[in-house]
Length: 181
Image (cartoon, rainbow, N blue to C red; front, side, top):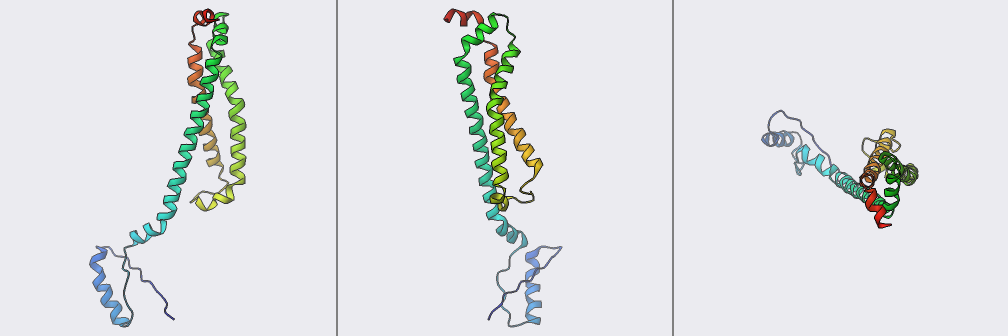
């Protein structure tokens, strides 16, 4: 039976310059021990963390794509709703409505979709935490600051996706929209 053993050496000088001296010292103590696979510690660490790092990068990229698609989808839906309600918005403004109240109207409508979506997403994340525990390094599966940050990011994206079409709705010319009716 052959057993493998390792020798780790720390040096203050260039590691490759010390290798011949280490080989001579090992040969003096155990002349029949074969020396192979001399590797620097940086390379060994890179080999052991390469796969988890690549997997984390891939998951991060998918997360960015998912968040971008969610924001784009919300923006698209709200832009469509604003377009469909342009005459109503113009009428509200013509009758003395406040542009800020129109912004609040769209933010409220957006919140009725976004908040339940965030709650469902957080609930799913809590139930899926055991499945993703192997992908987390230095973070507990039920890390409240991470959940709070994810919630804040989603609410910020939803707010921006709502604000842009609502801002456009606030600038609707009441006379133009009344003429089209």
